[in-house]
Length: 341
Image (cartoon, rainbow, N blue to C red):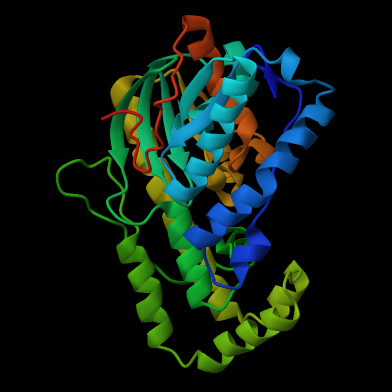
């Protein structure tokens, strides 16, 4: 629950990582079932945490998309039921805009406009020119894998657990990024677009060129008996050459993200930069952005607001509430809903 679009009264997240980890990625049908199983308990806990009841609500915000349609439908149906029963207005929110507001909610007046927004996660890698609340222009996006997706696929290839991004981020500082070089994408057409499929393939070719079967199988077998290995345990079964590859991979992803983000910010004469989404938790990305000598401030959300959460959706809904932009019961989930074109 969020008050006035800026004060978080409660924030409850029900993680599904353990459910999907055994499959090496999100299984849509299982995600929908877990949403259905958890939603009532999560809402009840959020109410208790905020010391509030349904009579205290002035509106209900719900993610309209993009995302997995089954999971979106669970949230949409539940939100409509509350609004119907309590006579409350319903507000549909774009998931990507929610990630942007996770930063705006915390930065407040320090976030100067126009701002360059980089939203980077397992499903999204987008650049937006942000001129005001609800005013976005798409500058660039991934043409294939999202950055977070590339992390997870490379981690799986090397025998690490899902989600792989946090594991590779932890291990990267122990490698030498200059020990090897992976290719950077050269984009035809829009130079602000991203592509990570070539990088993922380059890591695959590197693995295939070496005798790594025993090493990878050792990690996979280890994970079966130790679902959440510590950093020390990962380091004990990961050779230096693999650590070097991980460091080089992470450095390449970070360079791709920041190079294009900075080019876009310069072109639009941005006064600030927002980096949000699940990959915004990446310590390497945060450190690189802080080291850069940019003529404007760079804002990240706190780790708790970087990954998917309901507080950011409520924050994004508040300006819509002020403008009276309400939806009716015909509002539909849209798995590919665009924020801007």
